[in-house]
Amino acid sequence: MSAPLTVSTWTRDLVFAIAISFLIITFLYQPVRVEGTSMMPGLQDQERLFINKFEYHFEPIHRDDVVVFHFPLDPAKSYIKRVIAVPGDRLRIDDGQVYVNGKALKEPYVPMRFRDDRSYPETVLPRSEYFVMGDHRLISSDSRDFGPVNRNLIYGKATFVYWPTDDMGVVH
Image (cartoon, rainbow, N blue to C red; front, side, top):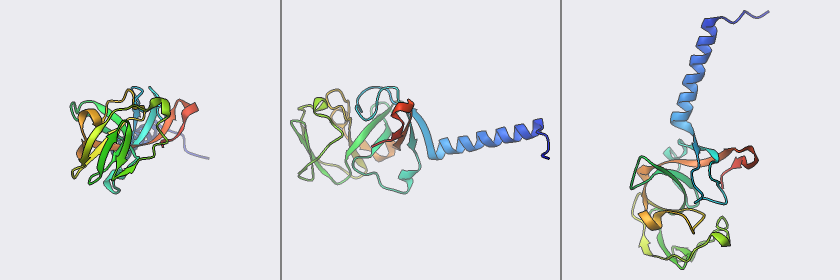
């Protein structure tokens, strides 16, 4: 027969659960809400997802990662975009076609109806700078507008959509 639960047991368990939740959210995973349609069709407006805040302490940021960062022109705002080019890459965009290191980038995550014809002059990304773009190129405000994003502004990798449940799954 188990001992009856007391107020002190409940209090202890509640404090422990809150402390663990705080540690997970602070250091590992953080829930965020997508605001806007610049990452369609992969991420929808108002979807809820978890970002991994821990991974980039040990692993480099890779091309195609979907990252969350403080907006360079107003660090109080957060943006979510896809990494298109990493430090040292030579990037240019001609009539909407992205070239990285002289090769046309294959972008299956950008449907034809979301492509645009904007261009961007050739540039080599400086150390600690990442070129990010939304998947809905027609409406995305991204590095074509505000420039590359410094590494110290990137604070998480989008990993898993949890709401709505119909869209639940790993972020690609």
